[in-house]
Length: 164
Image 1 (cartoon, rainbow, N blue to C red):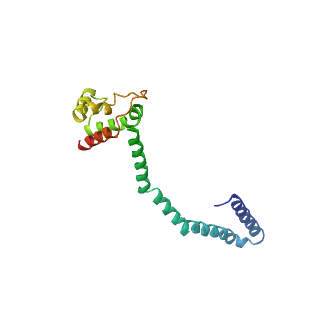
Image 2 (cartoon, helix red, strand yellow):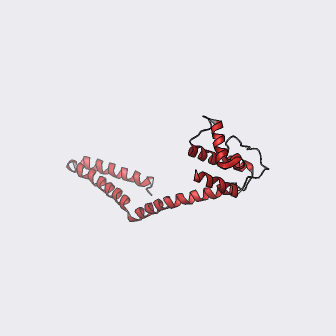
Image 3 (cartoon, rainbow, N blue to C red):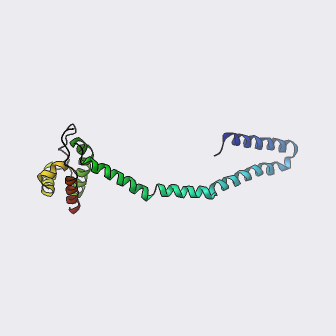
């Protein structure tokens, strides 16, 4: 909104007033310096308190608020669900890390601490068939041809995680 030439013109005007006031009217130097400062302060306050600016800020807050976050979350969830019907590489790259992390957090187990305990807990909870789609060690990122297990398997894995 502010243009550089306005600032330059204001500085030149203040300097000119100061020189003129100092050379001719020394007793008015303080007043001559105070008037442009007061005008600048009034303009600053006016810019901050303009109603249309506040309305725009409120609209921006609403746009970036909870509704926008929910839209982003929903779009990401749809994208992840679509990957369940893709290739195994898509599953391994996008879904497996999320499912494995959620399982590890829910079970309180970590791969680095005790791999066998994690595996036996996973087989116990999911069964051997579903565990192979959650197991963080069973990733085949280069396998572009094998299909992923699909939405039904993802739904079953998520429901078992939820019951945990």
